[in-house]
Image 1: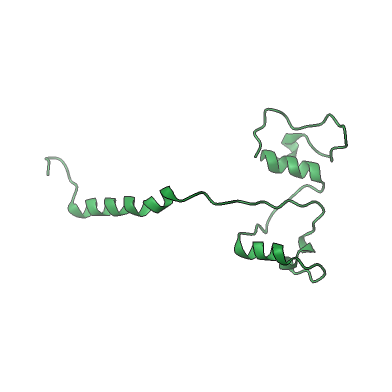
Image 2 (image 1 turned 45 degrees about the vertical axis):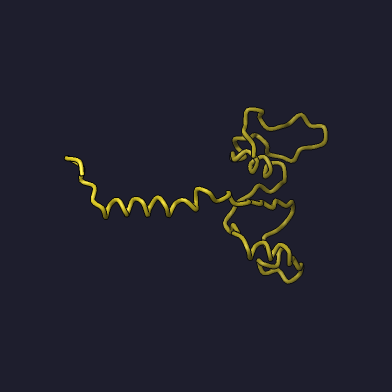
Length: 115
């Protein structure tokens, strides 16, 4: 051991084990993330939220195998919701408050980075 070096064999083993335990995370592939965005879908319109009127077995299976976000807030119409979701900015910062009509000049600012 060199003078002034206070590394013990125990500490060396601990460092090696720590680095080796992180290797699986360094070589793993990133997860697949799927967002399902639907217009006019109420909270209780899917059966995994308790609806017995509409059967949604495929959505229920996806929810059972994944992560469900149960505390969320959206805009009441489609264009502001999509603009907010795609830009990561609140509706007050996107400037999109109403649905787009066909042929409208409204659009997101071209300087925004989108998903």
